[in-house]
Image 1 (cartoon, rainbow, N blue to C red):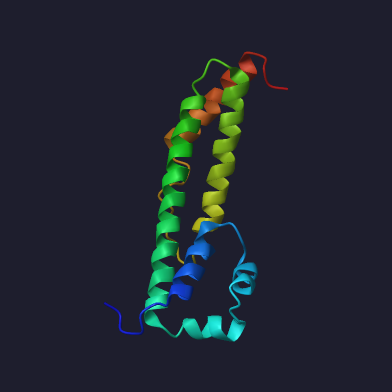
Image 2: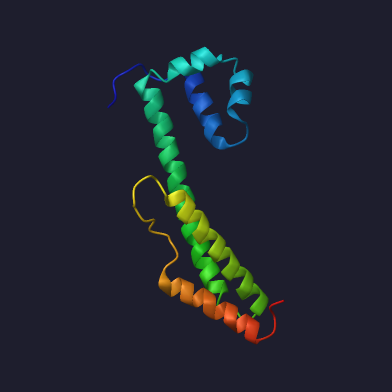
Length: 138
């Protein structure tokens, strides 16, 4: 366990509010009457930092999980009978893959595990071709 002072009730409340997404940082600090200097000083407490890091990791995990679920649903939609729905799903997959490529560039040549695979690209192109053949693409 990290050494340092235990978190105060106020610190716990601020952390909770920071991650509930209702207010921005400045509004939370203002409402709780916490000055910027005090807030910065809290980051000298290893337990405060550890709790923030734990919450950030949890948030990132939830984003990745939801992104994976959304991707699976989009792939299913590429096989729908509605050419327009399939086309829109294809476009969303392409947009999603572009976001992954941009955010995945961390500084080294590491590849993202959720990048557009050749199989998925083939399915996207096939669905788009099917939509064009059926005359639903404008």
